[in-house]
Image (cartoon, rainbow, N blue to C red):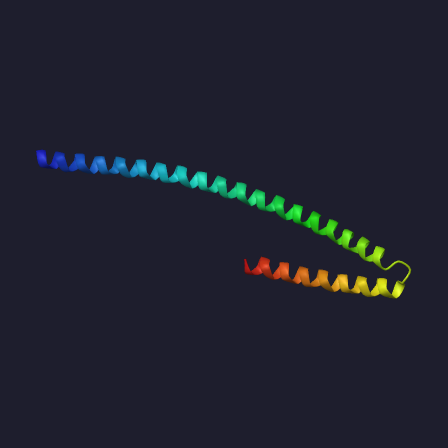
Amino acid sequence: MSSLSAILSGIDFKIKQLVEKLKRTERELAEAKQANQELLDIIETQKEQIKTLEEQNKILILRNTLDNTKGDSAKVKLKINKLIRDIDKSIELLTKMEHDG
Protein backbone atom coordinates (compact mmCIF):
# COMPACT_ATOMS: atom_id res chain seq x y z
CA MET A 1 0.00 0.00 0.00
CA SER A 2 2.89 2.36 0.73
CA SER A 3 4.17 1.96 -2.82
CA LEU A 4 0.77 3.05 -4.14
CA SER A 5 0.91 6.01 -1.79
CA ALA A 6 4.39 6.86 -3.05
CA ILE A 7 3.23 6.63 -6.66
CA LEU A 8 0.23 8.89 -5.97
CA SER A 9 2.47 11.32 -4.12
CA GLY A 10 4.85 11.40 -7.10
CA ILE A 11 1.98 11.97 -9.52
CA ASP A 12 0.63 14.76 -7.31
CA PHE A 13 4.07 16.40 -7.21
CA LYS A 14 4.43 16.23 -11.00
CA ILE A 15 0.94 17.67 -11.52
CA LYS A 16 1.81 20.59 -9.23
CA GLN A 17 5.00 21.17 -11.21
CA LEU A 18 3.07 21.13 -14.49
CA VAL A 19 0.46 23.55 -13.12
CA GLU A 20 3.23 25.96 -12.04
CA LYS A 21 4.91 25.63 -15.42
CA LEU A 22 1.58 26.33 -17.14
CA LYS A 23 1.02 29.45 -15.02
CA ARG A 24 4.54 30.67 -15.75
CA THR A 25 4.08 30.07 -19.48
CA GLU A 26 0.73 31.89 -19.47
CA ARG A 27 2.35 34.89 -17.74
CA GLU A 28 5.17 34.92 -20.27
CA LEU A 29 2.66 34.72 -23.11
CA ALA A 30 0.66 37.64 -21.71
CA GLU A 31 3.86 39.69 -21.37
CA ALA A 32 4.89 38.82 -24.92
CA LYS A 33 1.46 39.82 -26.24
CA GLN A 34 1.67 43.14 -24.43
CA ALA A 35 5.18 43.80 -25.76
CA ASN A 36 4.00 42.88 -29.25
CA GLN A 37 1.09 45.32 -29.03
CA GLU A 38 3.42 48.07 -27.85
CA LEU A 39 5.68 47.42 -30.83
CA LEU A 40 2.72 47.47 -33.21
CA ASP A 41 1.67 50.83 -31.74
CA ILE A 42 5.20 52.18 -32.25
CA ILE A 43 5.19 50.95 -35.85
CA GLU A 44 1.86 52.67 -36.51
CA THR A 45 3.14 55.93 -35.03
CA GLN A 46 6.29 55.71 -37.14
CA LYS A 47 4.25 55.04 -40.29
CA GLU A 48 2.26 58.21 -39.60
CA GLN A 49 5.47 60.16 -39.04
CA ILE A 50 6.89 58.81 -42.31
CA LYS A 51 3.78 59.91 -44.20
CA THR A 52 4.03 63.39 -42.70
CA LEU A 53 7.72 63.66 -43.54
CA GLU A 54 7.11 62.39 -47.07
CA GLU A 55 4.47 65.09 -47.60
CA GLN A 56 6.80 67.76 -46.21
CA ASN A 57 9.58 66.45 -48.46
CA LYS A 58 7.32 66.62 -51.53
CA ILE A 59 6.46 70.22 -50.72
CA LEU A 60 10.11 71.16 -50.24
CA ILE A 61 11.15 69.46 -53.46
CA LEU A 62 8.39 71.20 -55.37
CA ARG A 63 9.27 74.55 -53.83
CA ASN A 64 12.94 74.11 -54.71
CA THR A 65 12.06 73.01 -58.21
CA LEU A 66 9.84 76.01 -58.76
CA ASP A 67 12.49 78.35 -57.32
CA ASN A 68 15.07 76.94 -59.74
CA THR A 69 12.86 77.35 -62.82
CA LYS A 70 11.37 80.82 -62.29
CA GLY A 71 9.64 82.17 -65.36
CA ASP A 72 10.04 79.09 -67.54
CA SER A 73 6.73 77.22 -67.52
CA ALA A 74 7.96 74.47 -69.84
CA LYS A 75 10.79 73.66 -67.42
CA VAL A 76 8.36 73.74 -64.52
CA LYS A 77 6.06 71.26 -66.27
CA LEU A 78 8.98 68.93 -67.01
CA LYS A 79 10.19 69.11 -63.43
CA ILE A 80 6.68 68.43 -62.08
CA ASN A 81 6.31 65.44 -64.41
CA LYS A 82 9.67 64.09 -63.25
CA LEU A 83 8.64 64.55 -59.62
CA ILE A 84 5.40 62.70 -60.25
CA ARG A 85 7.28 59.80 -61.85
CA ASP A 86 9.71 59.71 -58.91
CA ILE A 87 6.82 59.73 -56.44
CA ASP A 88 5.09 56.93 -58.34
CA LYS A 89 8.28 54.86 -58.25
CA SER A 90 8.62 55.48 -54.52
CA ILE A 91 5.03 54.46 -53.88
CA GLU A 92 5.53 51.33 -55.98
CA LEU A 93 8.64 50.39 -53.98
CA LEU A 94 6.90 51.04 -50.66
CA THR A 95 3.92 48.96 -51.72
CA LYS A 96 6.22 46.14 -52.79
CA MET A 97 8.09 46.33 -49.47
CA GLU A 98 4.81 46.14 -47.50
CA HIS A 99 3.69 43.06 -49.46
CA ASP A 100 7.09 41.35 -49.19
CA GLY A 101 7.76 42.26 -45.55
